Length: 185
Image 1 (cartoon, rainbow, N blue to C red):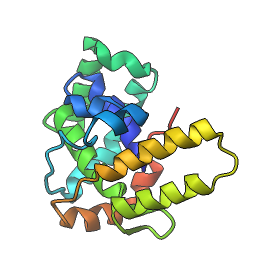
Image 2: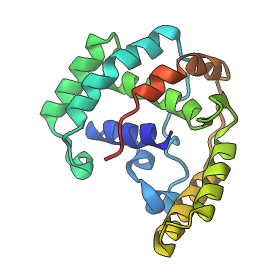
Image 3: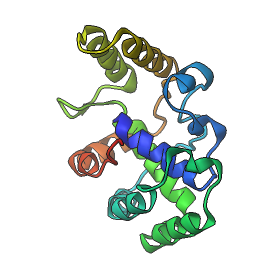
Image 4: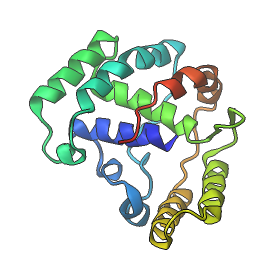
């Protein structure tokens, strides 16, 4: 589920409307920021919002896909206008609302065990990922150290889900959401 948040973090940054806590990634994020969700206003999701998010995702990714990761430092007004137009096309009040929905979806997805497709909580998922990295014999020691630092930082910054009904709604659409995840570059 980290793929969704990586894409989401870039998407949010592309407009320059993200709180500073969403701008970092990797080990620097783990060491300096409390959570990528720190600026997220948790809200109850609706079936319609999830369907609108799914419908808009490909167009949003098409606009953001060619942008370099540091493009968020100086958001392009043309890209911002395209993202706003896409969001409105899919019945979001704004691109910020699209991002809020994406963030609430991602918050749930971070706690889903991809093997069982059940919500177990972000802490459990992160502990599983930590165990996998520790057991990985193919990673270089430096890469392993960096990955473990990032995962342990994320573990310390797990944000509890305030709207428990979002879990069932996201799980209902899990396969669709998984298929629509932005691919890591």
